[in-house]
Length: 531
Image (cartoon, rainbow, N blue to C red; front, side):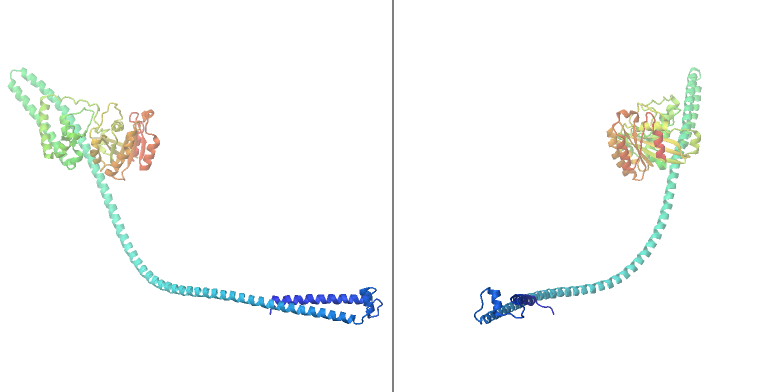
């Protein structure tokens, strides 16, 4: 059992008191030894007086008793003081103990109340946790049931997905077959169109030869007629000349009727692509153009030129009306061929009309190309589309080329990767009034070439509008090439090369800079487009 601090303090006081008493006793012993000089083993009153008082002697025998009484009183007083100190210390210790006990009790009561509150909080928390545990167990059971349902539903979805995947694979196979058939039909159709075009070219060439022959015969007949006029028997001469003229005219009409019937069988189902629209606003076929305006012998021309002012009249007229006009024109032309010499076709400022189909070799024409691609050239006016077309198809350049009116085209056959490829190059008008016509040619195009002038920043700014028109008309999958023309005028450049490259990269375009004047990169860019 531990002692209180007050009790420890009282013991320390007792110890000090005993030490003082021991010191007094030690001094008394020393005083006794000093007084007992003679070593008698006791001291007398005289010895004490001699020691304490010097020469004074105790005369009263009761002095010792008084000293003893005084000493006893002192001792008694010391004992009483000690008892009082002990009592005071004890009371103080008891008071401190009681205060400490009271404070400790209050602290313990406070701690107890705090612990009780904590216990209550813990109890509430435990109840809440138990409730949450019960809810979690309930949710786990519900989750387990839901998982079972979801697993079953997932299995059902898996079976449906497998079934759908099988159907999708079958649909994809059918779609691939349909796409292959469509592609094959498209290629066959393009090749058929090309073969029809080639047959028309060959027929046209033969007609040109026949026309030359007819002109020679007409000249010969005129000479004979003049000679007959000089003879007396003019009636017989006229009759002979008329019979020969009718025979020649009959042969010519039979040839043209044969050509018309063949063309009606092959070309009329695709009249939109075979009809030509002349600058006078009336539609005409190839033989009409041959009869009315025969070209030079070394050229094989096809002209498609659309005049905006007469286009609504053309669209409103019926096909039968056009056929009647063609028939009347043919009859009139036959009479003209027999009566007068056909004047040569005047040359245009454009030289040869763009739209001609050059026959490079009879062997190539007879064998035919492996593929036929339709390429449309677009861009602002005066960027050099027609010059590029002439440089690519004819390898020539004319500085006095006029602006294209409507739509022109040329065909160029190339050997690309050991295969014959025919490029049908369509030259479109760059003026704003022909934009609606130009957009119609985007639908069946296999590629588009957007041309701008590197010396004219405005033509480069319009490239974005052309790209939007191409994407709206032809779709986003069609290959597009951005072509900067007139690199021979690099000193006058207004469109930096980096801007064009960035635009081509943003729109994922094929990009080249070329020059129709110097033929730089013209053929290379078109071969890249064909690949």
